[in-house]
Length: 128
Image (cartoon, rainbow, N blue to C red; front, side, top):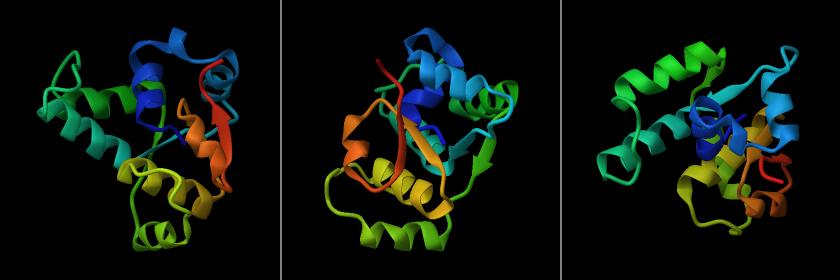
């Protein structure tokens, strides 16, 4: 599962990813998921002028997900409830839901945020 930065880098700047992260994302044996939290964060940051994209998020996000062969991961009630069991190592609500999703689903979260490693979650650092 990719966090927001990693999704954006995979779609537009894969050279920013560590070789291990790039290999994991490109390995055809791996199913790569993009959480609805990623889409939500992209839309919010784009609307606030904090994120530039080559086109509108309405066009860019679905197109990038499809082109890269990624899968959608919705946010369920179980995912949100799993946040309650997380220690408060990270204040960002988007990251917290993605951590909860990765834990609940037994997925590896690929992230550039080293704070993710403080959680009991499978984590692959996306930067060297």
